[in-house]
Every structure is written in structure tokens, then in C-alpha cells.
View (cartoon, helix red, strand yellow):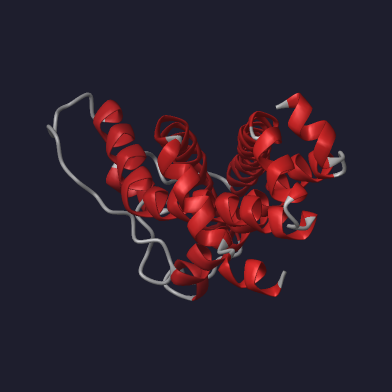
Length: 226
């Protein structure tokens, strides 16, 4: 039993499954990438507006370096910066509600993806359980798989998703007058860390909830279902 546990590598097992189901993996990562990119940009804008309302220095704290895609979006896109504090507060509330909605969408996407994956792999799970692997071992596989999806989605969102959204927004607002150009939003390290922790927590919790119910079924029943 000890030799079996030592040879069981959840990361290798999860990675092989992601490669085997490449189309679903890419679709899930692409969808999560866009939702995470929206979270990064809306949270940047929220912090920027709160900072302006409080009259703080936008170059300190979370806004160090002035965030393209945050307060500087007003300047980049030639929008009116002369907003009242009430208007800014209303915009902050709207963006916070939008961010919450995006989080719920991301949770639903991840939960639904992992729930379908678990249901389709009942026989596989039953075989692993029948040869001696515990529910804990199987849970590690799915948590590792969910963590990989979350991490890949976050990295893609940071370096591809956010520039895509910002540049598309700029292009639409300017109606193509500037042509195609590239802007890489400079999101502060602290905010990146916060959203990364949120993303990983979201993916791991949704994966755990989607997997827990199936693991309570007897291995024989899972193999029959499969």
C-alpha cells in the first residue's frame, strides 16, 4: 500500500487528464481567463475611484505607478474626469456589484466543469478506489486539476486577457481613430496577489464541492454507473 501511494502523483495524473481532454481544458481556461481579467480591471478601477474620493495620492499603496485601466482609463480614453464624489461613489457601488456577479459566474463555470468531469469519470474513480486508493487520494487529483486550471487561467488573464479587454475598449471608444495599438495594464503587485489568492480559493472550493458528493458513493456503484 505504501509503494502504491508513493507511486501515485496527483499532479502527473491531473496533467495527463487535462491533456487528454484538451478541448474542454482550453474552453474552460479561456472562459475563466476573461472573467478573471474583468475582475482584475474592475477591482483596479474600484480602488482608483475610492482613492480619488478619499483624496489620496494615486501613486501610493495599491495604485503605485498609476494603473492603466484604473483611474488613468479616464485619461487614456479622453473621458471626463470631472466627476462628483457622489457619481464616483455610485460608480464604485456599480463596479463592486459587477465584480460580485463576475465572481459568481466564475464559480458556476468552475463548479459545472468539475461536476461534469467527475460524473464522466465515475468508473475511473471506482477503479482507483477498488485497488486501494482512498477518497483523499482521489480528491487530491481533482483539487490539483482544479488548481492547475485556476493558475493557468490567472496567468493568461494577467498577460493576455487584461490587455485584450483594455485595447478593445480603447479601440471601440476611439472608434478606431488610433488604429490597432497595444497597452499592457500595469496592475500593482498587491492587487495581483489578492486576485490570485481569490482565484485559487474559488477554483479549489468549487472543485471540492463538485467532487465531494461523488466520492461518498461506493466504488462498486461508481463502476456500475460508469
